[in-house]
Length: 422
Picture 1 (cartoon, rainbow, N blue to C red):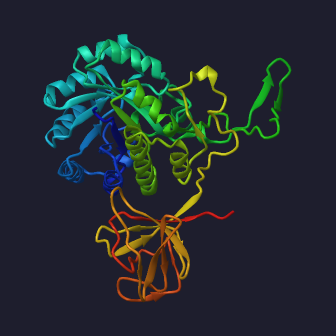
Picture 2 (cartoon, rainbow, N blue to C red; picture 1 turned 90 degrees about the horizontal axis):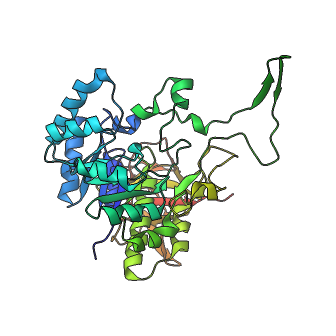
Picture 3 (cartoon, rainbow, N blue to C red; picture 1 turned 180 degrees about the horizontal axis):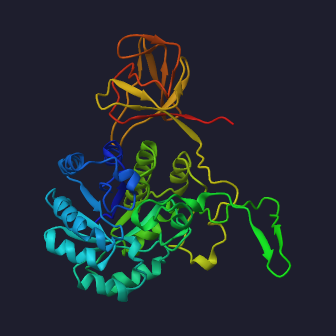
């Protein structure tokens, strides 16, 4: 049986490496041109992006390039040259949103697979068939589609690959087709510069032009004014149902602008869910416990399993702040001898160790610190906090950019984390 692909976001080179080391089969990202995540796209230059593609291929994994913005007439020439330049790097696919961009890709990148972005809002087999007929190899379905509709598309077009989102931020609008940010901030979502205006708190007023009255609408208790603020998608508990359908070729995690911790934990958790399904030991509770450690706006299982009109838990009316149950204290450097502090670490406190996929940790006890196993988990406890130059610190905080010595080498991109005590 062919295993479903796990596809993770690569907002920059570091997060690309983390996602791959924590279990992703493939990653997606791009430079800023025509990518719907301009902020993350600026993390890559053409030169570093080529290096990222080569690095991914060295691991026998895949990289798909986001060129899914909606270009204006004045940008067509730039789009042509951009596609041509990206094609020379030999990525595994181009993610596109428009028929015109597909035509350009077929002209300037004839040997590169085409994936249709979720921005195209494919919801049925008629649209899917049209795109397949014009050369699209894979369709990233709209977030609003149901699993039954995905199954019908696969039945009608069995050679068409189908990719679905299973985790990450949700858009209040229909798969990102929103103008609120453009109207209020002049930042156009479908050109990659969404200001996330849907996350703001709004005060509502009612007015009457005949007698000039204007009054503020009071909210009910516990119903806030974050009227557009969608919770985050989390379909980990339904991975078994999705895989049983046999209709899905790739599970996609959203989040190119999210943290390195998010990239690692989501990849490792969904990797576990996929592998556990095939091994006959699926455990939804385990996956949810791990995903709750990441920053989130509250979770919803969105629309793949349930129709939108059946849902009443998709909005977070209380706050737009993302919360998680753990703080990320550190990230081990690629040299495996040091870590960079991300929060704070004090001497003589236990900090949990999370290693990349298929990597192990040994217990140790020396003058710098010790690593111990408690209830099946590994923890590191520093006796001394030493910088690379040998200076001893009383503590280390996120503002300190000095690499900190580990008591023993740990795998690159190992995460050090601590549970938040409220």
